[in-house]
Length: 522
Image 1 (cartoon, rainbow, N blue to C red):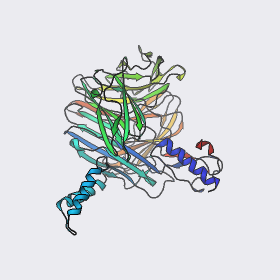
Image 2: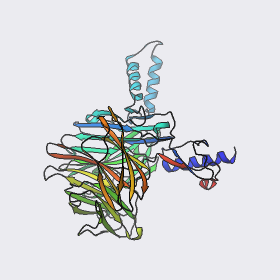
Image 3: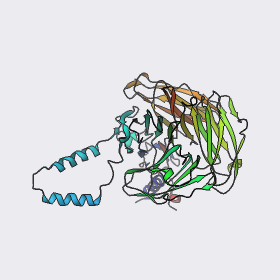
């Protein structure tokens, strides 16, 4: 094998180590633009997503949506399939042995009732919950009640670059009533969730989904206002192959605390993780993982009509830190009166009530540690509506959109796209896809001024039928952060859910074949 081939294999190996599911194949010179000595940017050719179980309520109505934007240079073939995690679970070995023993007693040519049921079961297991037909057009599926499953999915070829999936659930009554939404995510080995709770008024689950053929072993650490909470069964939790495991946080500790930071560490394997936070009085929503601990955090897209904003923050180390707090408003960065600086003690969860922070204008929180020297994770809990008819949602610290990101399940009314550029002006392109049942894509370009947050009037597909996707692409300027809010009103209660838009990591830089990548093998 020559040196060029070895270099390409080294690059692909390094990529797989970083991205988990994501993978690319070696480019041909024409696809790479024949750029000698420089990295070529190419579409990812394989990726995976995990969606947690939507609800335990019999009144839940869930919509799953899947979408891949059209990507120049993507492979001409491929698939994007989401299947039930339960249907993909590895069979029990003893069950197989019993079936073999029963099969020995059956006469040749006979079709037993058991065989018919097994065949039907296998057929159902192979049937996808959701499968894309073409890039640029989203597809959706609906499921009612508590039987809606967690999903495990993979995409390859022309569907892999930018593949996004979302589940949106409406619960009519009971604990967690309201609108709950979460973007399906990739598997990883570590997650931080500031903003969870073990209080009696909350029912918070950490949902763990294992996409692989071997079991994953997970530790769950809880941190409250005085430090780490004593847990009874938080260590060595086994998540079976290709299955989902919801863990009720209040069963892990006897301590009841309003504000808790959850740290998920995977000892063996990898999982997808998300917290479902349900409240007796104020509904509930999904709490996605915060961006990695950092000395600078951005929490984008706090609704302009927020009645209460509660910030929960945590620093993993022993060092204390004074966080500088600023609000990126439509007019620029401002300092909230009375909350200019927030003090965090090392290893302890801290919560701060910021009140009606946005005061009728779009806003995003920007948190900064002195010199960026102390890493922090953070999230806010937002309430909308009047007393007695309030609904809640969560916004964690987000990662920037480096190239492209997509929000799904949008509607012509009730969708708000909020974009912030805290460090410098930026230009973005926003594309509204075709609808799930019809419509023509539309595109608009926007300029976001430095230090501001803008609730932009996003395009809507012409002749829209069904839901549609909004894809945000960065064109120029500084880092861009964004979130999407879905809202409706039911019985006087303002149902809503907010999802930050992480970069879809649909493109990857692949070194030229002539480069020496031996450093990656050290």
